[in-house]
Length: 445
Image (cartoon, rainbow, N blue to C red; front, side, top):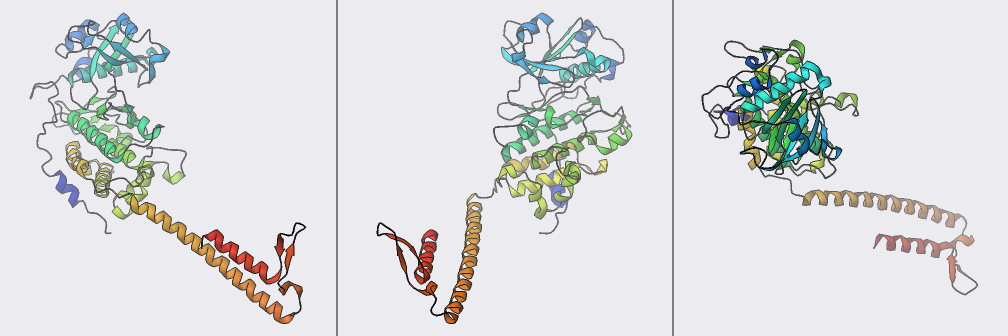
């Protein structure tokens, strides 16, 4: 099959700039811009009262340390979920008597590790600030925070299915089905598109599989906004910042120059989409040297549909849409362009990927079972043919021997009887005939 051109991609994203009902206004009021992060952090140390005043109207709850300690059973080991970007995370529960308007629900409580220093506090503040103002179905919901003495905590909705990283690389319950993977990809793309469309725009900066959380229906929620930054405004083309993020996901131009744009997130999305397609991690030191970096190894295969099977996760067992895989591969290829200007916007990515959810041209399971049987039959036939050739060669040798030594006892038809009168063995022709009969019985002939 000839190499795919980029015309199909261009067609499927044409008109992508149109407003989609899925995209909610960042502050719930269309046309009302949110406050940029620098307006909050430039003033230096912020008191709890000042933070509460800044976030008024955000519907965030300010919890006390005692309330969250009770909600997590004193941060018990049994409730420990893992370690997040700046500290441990615990499962907890709040009831509807704790705050007016707060429904009883399970929650995740992220506790800032004080050893993180000033950087940890800034990341905590960024997360409160961004998630306090931004609401979208593909962003994890921040319920509240604790800012009391030395305690810094964040309280989120509890995501029962955990992270995408866990399901792709650490699951003991089998592989994610194709449609679930594409559903996750589309949801994540919508979350990023929403951030990039905010006023001012938000650059996520740390988009990776471990920051994509899933609910019980595998709906996608982006989490961990500690490294998020306000995007360029006015005539600015980029934001210059210290290089931070995760190796294997960060865009090459950002690593080289520190110049951050929304297209940096697009590159990171391409890496995660490639992980969803391949079932491989962005960096895997356990593989052969040329396959350790997923993008370097896989990107050349994404351009040609006849090579794509080398990238698709074998755990899917061929149960995926051929057309859908080609579309997703083309999107990933474009997102992973070395030139940021050649990458699509996240709105364009959403428009390109959404139709994949309706593509059901899966491989039927039957022919693959048949192929295996045919291969087994071929191997058996080859074995039989070899044995028959060996038998024919042996027969010719025996004929030559009989002609040369006609009186030899080995050519006689002698039956050997045991002490009990039963046949104990054969010699000569009868032995050969018995071997042939046993051979065909074993084959079922």
